[in-house]
Image (cartoon, rainbow, N blue to C red):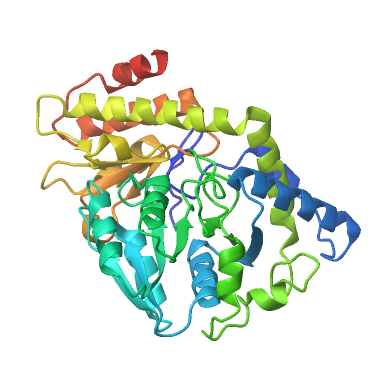
Length: 394
């Protein structure tokens, strides 16, 4: 069997999750097993959990699962609802639709608001829908803070304000899988009842550690939820010293989480948000330059108020196969990017700019993308790197 060609130099991983893992985080997890009831581990667990609460800006209870973000969704929904309960999920991309499909599997009556994927939710439409729910049949409003498939962000405080203005008692659930640790999020101040999160994006950890953060209103709802559950059941978790997990605790990820949160707090949480914004602005500046004056690549999100600071989705000209372009970028330049999902399959590619990265890494990725645009014969204006540099310097 012939060997695959060697790619010299460092692989540039610009996917929108999983993300680059810092060397010190990998080193923290490079250890032998330890019993999860030992005092040494419990001290690490407590530090990691407290650090995650600080990143969430909350005092909420946190339940952990050995699972990806999809498992965290499932753990959240089965603990809050009963078959037949009605919920409203704000649409806008592949992941909000997937959350809706998952919830429907458990007999939850799901209403998925269909919105323009390039623009996101019209807030007035949400207000009108809640006004129409005079009997308060809607038990929860669910929002994907950052829709990774489209790079469109939802304004969570504005959604909370609508719920309050309408005096609607629905739970407010937020998926922060690709926003936490990337841009501003404040669970308690924003009145969010439940947060769904995962380890592999802004937390700079491997895939496999999901969590739900549940406030008092959510814990009260859990007491009456009747969807069958075992591994994800919060009730026995609350009786455990770790107040999480059913069965064995995955020890090593918590050593990594303690270190990743230490790195975030060493930089400063708000400084981390600012860095992500700065790098995202550089990516967007490059895309605008590429698409200036021709039918070239363009930002998929058409609403500047909702640009994502963790991922940028880039719409290619009609007829250009996105997956073939991504393969060229990987095979020739050793740069990995994300592809389009669902109805966007083959139409876009996505540059992730979240987690452990800096200006040089972004400029290297953008330089390779511009070279690949030329290789593929895709119409574009040159100078994307210069535009990115100008954005960084400004």
